[in-house]
Image 1 (cartoon, rainbow, N blue to C red):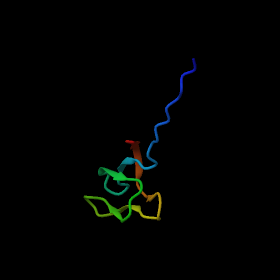
Image 2 (cartoon, one colour):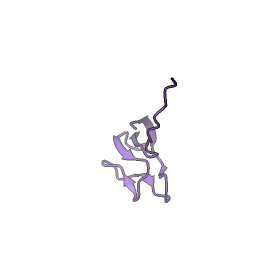
Image 3 (cartoon, rainbow, N blue to C red):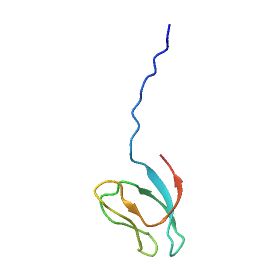
Length: 65
């Protein structure tokens, strides 16, 4: 008897742990952001919405899933 593989859908979006290139502040952002994401310390733009996956302008340290 053959085992069946159960396909579990995974989301296409992820959370990212990023570092601000200006001040070095680290924070968590959503990679499908629908509005501008700014640094909590220096107010620099970290991600810009594009209609799908956001354009990330910070250094991505880790993908959180």
